[in-house]
Amino acid sequence: MKLKIRNLSKSYGKKNVLNSVNFTFEEGKIYGLIGRNGSGKTTFFNAINEDVEIDSGEIFLDNKKIMTQDIGYVLATPNVPEFLTGKEFLTFFLEVNKNKIKNPKSISEYFNMVQMSEEDQDKIMKEYSHGMKNKIQLLIHIISNPKVLLLDEPLTSFDIVVQDEMKKLLKDIKKEHILIFSTHILEIAMDLCDEIVIIHDRKLELIEKKNLNRQDYKKKIIQNLKGETHV
Image (cartoon, rainbow, N blue to C red):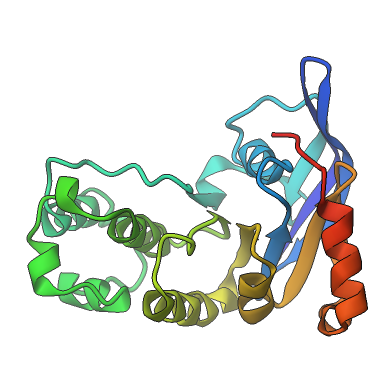
């Protein structure tokens, strides 16, 4: 399975954010999309998810136009129904989607996947921290099992222990998915991702991970990213 981006361009007024982007993402890998805050990472995700209208270009999944049901999008700012408890929300989600879920598990098994205690499961989500809401959002998308999973800065709200738990979970599910993980923190991408891609000069560029172990090369990448601010 391959996600192919062909000549993708997007501008907001006179500001060009993405310019004739060409790239191919492959199944079974986690891609780290690196760029400063405001470099265009979220615009790129919004373009794939059809949340913004692109100026030109095409997006294919295995040579067919990508469909919204093929995509899961974990937002940087999670959106959950705060008047429900975590358990009520998950129960409702599983009931509504019971005919779509492959190899369903019990509610407790799902919560165990994201290391959420029974006490937290029974809290209304209005009382959840940003990180806990992010756990619920990520869990819902894992259950939905999309072919392409876009993750916009999903780990920055977690402490070190929870980050490690989520990294393991993402590595466990990557085999049958295309995972694209955006971050402005190079160290997180180095630890989690199989491939590193930077947004530079409004395009995507693949970087050899082995080169990033060299301090001179890492410094060069950081210098290239400095000063870039798009959307």
